[in-house]
Image (cartoon, rainbow, N blue to C red; front, side):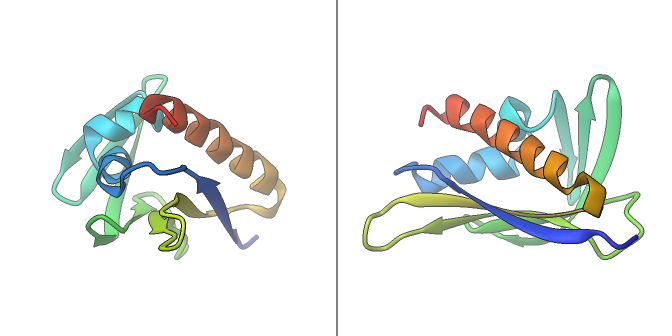
Length: 126
């Protein structure tokens, strides 16, 4: 079964882009909300949850704007991406998450992102 692409948008109020960028692109920042432990070697990121490691490769990066990963064990063209958008009128920051999930896991995947981004909001203080 082919994975379905989905996109979620999370209002981050007026969080500075530089702060949000550090939380979505650095090992230290990602460890605060995304995984129990994170290590980075070039384009390789190793994420750990409950003692289990999963590796991803950065396949796209625009500093201060977006970072796109592909899980190393992924056999399809699926990826996950976190990007930052700022409304020029209100100066509000939005975190946009794009990911893929099996159709029967779509709701769970969305819920997982919502939970993780709630943790991110607490870490940033918004």
